[in-house]
Amino acid sequence: MRLRRKAKVIKIGNISIGGNNPIAIQSMVKTRTADIERTSRQIKELKDAGCEIVRLAIKDNADAQALKKIRSEAKIPLVADIHFHWQLALEAIDNGADKIRLNPGNIYRKEEIREIARAAKQAHIPIRVGVNSGSLRKTKNIADVMVKEVLEYVKVLEEFKFYDIVISLKASNILDTIEAYRKIAATCDYPLHLGVTATGLPQQGVVKSSIAVGALLLEGIGDTIRVSLTDTAKTEVQAAKIILEALGLRRFGPEIISCPTCGRCEVDLVKLVNEFEKELTAVNCKLLTVNSRPLRVALMGCEVNGPGEAREADLGIAFGSKVGLLFRRGRPQRKISFNNCIAVLLKEVKDLHG
Image (cartoon, rainbow, N blue to C red; front, top):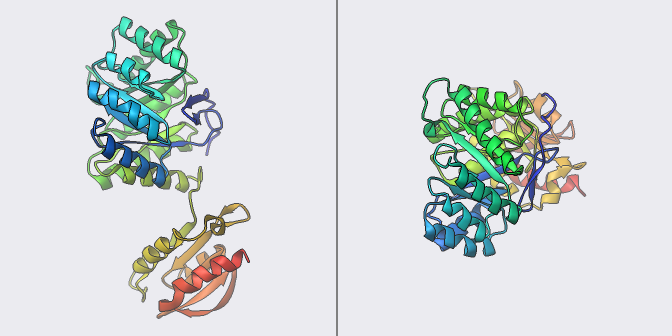
C-alpha cells in the first residue's frame, strides 16, 4: 500500500477528515427529511452500526426546517444535500447543518455560490463539491469533465476566500471514477470523499464499490467513503466497514477467518460462522482484543488449510468429521464436538484475558 496522500484537514462536526485521521464512514438517510421521527430513528440506527457522518436530502423548505429538530437530537455530524435550489443551503446552515453538499451540475451561478460560501464561512462549516456523472451536460471523457468542473467550482469558492472544501467525483462506471479521483488527487490537497454512484443491484454495488474504493485507498487516495447501494443505509455502512477492514485501514471488531467450504467439509460451517458472529456481539468489547489488536478467530471446515489457518489465529478450530481440533495461540489443545464448539470458543475468548 502506498503512502497516504496528504490532504488538508477539514472538520465536520466532531469528525475530522484528511491528514492522518482515520478514513471516515458515511451514509445517507433514505427517509424524507421532513419526517422527523423516521429520519431521527434511521440516523440513530446508522450511528449504532458504525456510521460517522450522515447526509440528508434537503428537497424543500419543510426538509430544511426539520433539520433544526433533527440536529438537536442527533449525536453525529449531519450533511445537508442540496440540489437546484441554492436558498435551501442557506436555510440548512441556519438550522444547524454541519456541512453542505453542492452539485456543480445544478447550482452553478457565481452569485449563488458566493452567498452559500459566505454563510458557510460564518457558520464555520465545510462545503463538499460533489460531482456525479449523471449531472454532467457532456457524456464523453467523463473523468476529464468531472475533474474540470470540480476545479472550476473550487476556484470560484477560493475567489471568495473559502477553503473548507471536500471533493467527490462519482461515476457509475468504476474506471471513470478511479481515473477522476487519481487526476484530482494530483492537482489539489483538499480531502476526497470516495464512492461510486448508481451502482445497481446490492451485490453488484458492493463489488463495484469495493473495486473502485479499494483501488484508490490502496494508492493512498481518499479520506472518507460512502458505499452507495440500492439497499438499506445500514447495509451501506456494513459494506464500508468491511472494505476498510479488508485493507487493514481500520478494525471494528474481531476478525473471523473461515473457508468457503467444499465437498470435503462434513459440518455446517456456514451456520456455525453466522451463529458465532451473533454471539460475539454480546461479548464485552474488551475481550475482543489481544495485545491491543483485534481478536482473530479461524473456523475451518477441513484438513487442507484448516490446521494452518487455525494455528495462525488467536483461536481456531479445524474440523474433520463432526469433531474439530482446537488451537490456541498457535498450539493444538484438544478435540471438541461441532455441537459444543461455540460455547467452547466463547469460554476461550474470556480465558485469553483471564
